[in-house]
Amino acid sequence: MKKNRHNIGLVITVLVISSMVSCSEHIVNPNPEIPLEDIPVIADRRLSINGIDLDPMTTLEEPIGIPPGATKAHVRLTLAGAIMSTAYVQVNTSTGGAKGFNVNRDISTPFKYQYWRPGDDADLWITVDIINPRHTPGDQFKITFPGEGTAGPVACFFQIQEGAVNELPAEMPFHRDPLVLHADGVTPSMDLDMGAIEWSDSGFDADGNPVWRSRLSHGYSQASNGETGLYTNVEAFPDHAVNPQTREVDSEGRPFVRLHTVKFEEPVVFSGKTFPFQASVLQGSKLDEWKYRRGIYRAQIQTPSRRGAWSAFWAVGSVLSTGASQWPPEIDFFESFNGAYGAAYTPRSTSSAQHIGVHGSNVRDMVNGLKSELDRVPGFELDIDLNAEPHDYACIIEDDWITHFVDGKETLQHRNMLDRADGNTDWAFYPIINVAVKIDAGNPYNEGTSDLLWYGLQYYAPGSGWYVQ
Image (tube, rainbow, N blue to C red; front, side, top):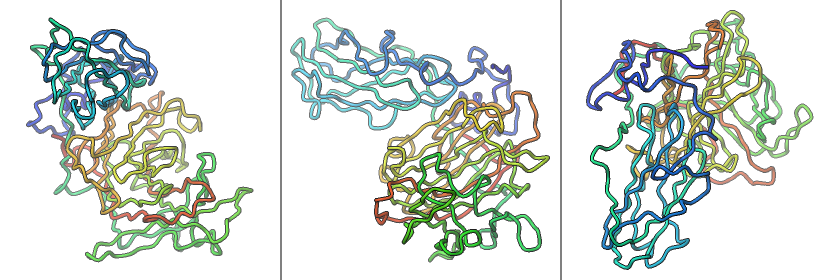
């Protein structure tokens, strides 16, 4: 399914970085040679090296020649398929097959990820520094290119060869800088009062007014995800809940909501399954004023550091005329897995995604997303720690693009594939904040911090004054 639309998101990416673009302004795509397409399946996003197609997990057969005494080595990677979603590679050395070079001493590779973003050219030149040049023909070293958003890693050798020419092209392919979101100082269309937020199991208060709901719309567990935490609240689980949601104020006077996880003293049996841990959630399925299909959702969150404490700020669909929840669609504005699913366990790990499929079918046709270690993302400090203080997570939902930000810096942009195929607009997203637990029952679950601290939530309508630069 292809859509022939003017590309608002893409035009933002190809303007000079110093210019500022209002996302409420309709701008014609200045580069019609890059048409909008569906996001290619991951298997089709293959990498080639210097024009030679490679299968994932393979190495270019012929070494790339570099002249004796070279201090730099250049290589051209090409990403196959339409670039409708952010992808990157790391540039790593490998000791395998090295001759004459000590790669740990002689070779320096870029630490930051090397990106393809929507609007970029398919070719990407990588430069490796040779700290201690070699002059002996046949000496060689190996570079590998693992990453995210591609079909899989590839590798190549650089080899000293007499008469070799290894230079960058006179005209480099276009690769844009990451976008920066500017919303500070803009009055949000909705701004949650964290000191007055209310919640209940049903999503209604004692007077029948809608409030935040302290359970998932479909129940109290997600065992199908392999989660081992039960989403409790004091109404539904008075004998087992351990302060799962509490309003508090920190030492700086800032109100926040604590979503608490813990290992139960005794496992809780629910719906025939045993749950060793408590998880916690608050979600807006009953709050029509928080349901939108376009605009910005933004939250301030401090994540837990405990292994298996899986934090998420996300949204699923709601039928506006009935209020019924539906899945798909789903946008994961931000997730931190803390080792769940074998993901990285660091204070810098982030993930964002969209889950694509027929609305309300409970069947996912495709998931597209990106995991990142933020110290390797341009614009972030090497010592960034998402668990030490609140950070800002935002997502712009436009007709053509979904763009994710951490602390105002772009981490992922991908084609919006979540609209209904029939064009029906009787639906919108509603926000969810939760901390799941996904770890073995035998784990003591006692290292680091266990709780998600939620400091704020805002929604900005299209054209309300925010912009990207």
